[in-house]
Length: 117
Image (cartoon, rainbow, N blue to C red; front, side, top):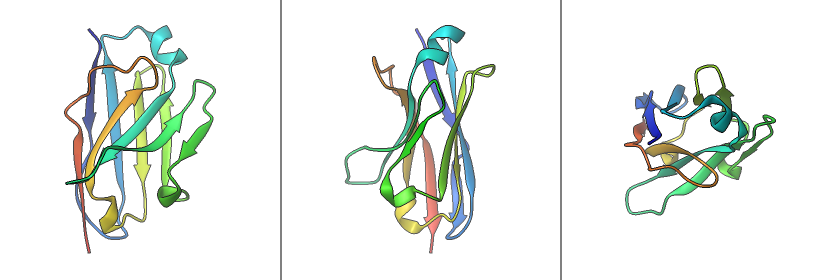
């Protein structure tokens, strides 16, 4: 079964940057290419929320609070989805996950992002 592995999180000061990666393994390339991929995040005590989405045609959409700071992209050859996060704020602190739109795959372990003030 396909597996999602997120990485790239860490501890950063406010204003800093991180680049998250999400590798989709055991997924054929055509399936990866045709899917809409998204990054989500879940802060302690809060529900998981959709942060950014990229289509097969590379159209993107973002949560209002991250517009202009985050950039989602995809690499078909590597079957990897990225999230470049700049100008990070303490409120961006959360565990970040990726998944495709429909049908969703089993969730990965996520990657922790902690932004200190």
